[in-house]
Image 1 (tube, rainbow, N blue to C red):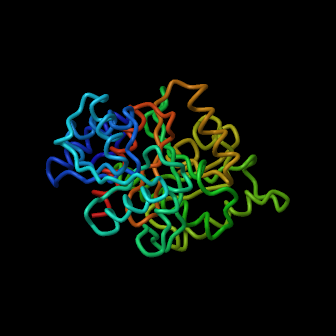
Image 2: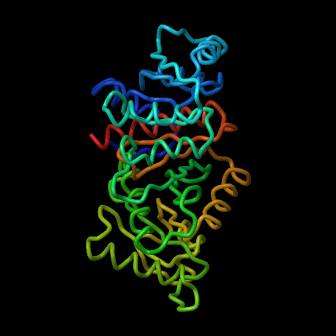
Image 3: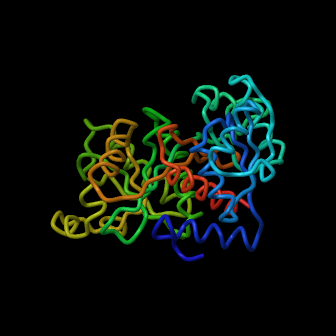
Length: 308
């Protein structure tokens, strides 16, 4: 598969995979929102998925009608308890009856409790992390930012897992050997700045095969990670500088600010996905648009095909 360079291209590639290899099944926890159903319906009509909708049957059926969809196209599991919706939905995935776990209207803590349940959850032995992915006007590729939403202040071991999760996802979108920039405020290793020390260690881990299928460099400041001219001015000779696919942030503060700056300051299209679990996980905000939710579903479909 060629490298995906726009989010609409990602949707088209997901369609091709599903046409050739079959649709994926999404299990939605507390599917009691018409906007959510509209996104799921769009993905279903595109030939990407079939869906299992878990929630209060009457509310789910009303939302299906409001979204202009048909009940006959869905499997509905009646579960009136919000606390149990996550467990019921994730059990469909861990049992093999579904491929993707998706958050509906239930609170995030209930959703994550299902995902991390020791008996029926989706633990993989690796740190589970979040990845935003952005198409930004003026750039010829998708940018992947991790972790800006899930892990707060990861240590070096956790960072290695998060980085590998993100690389695996980028590869699912056709980036054969992702270029990873470990971001910091400066380009030089400084013992007084822990982010630069971790960046240096991650580079060594990559060179020694502990982090695979990518090229890692850092510390790099944001300008020389994405702008080749800035890298040249600072005399940074690196296969990553100016060409980064993955912007690997030191903590959630930096990542959240970077991701939201892209969303609000640039012409962009953005979505997100949880990676590193035993199956792809779609964790969208209740405030996200139907388009953002559909893009996240398409990304999960790509990831599921890649895993298989």
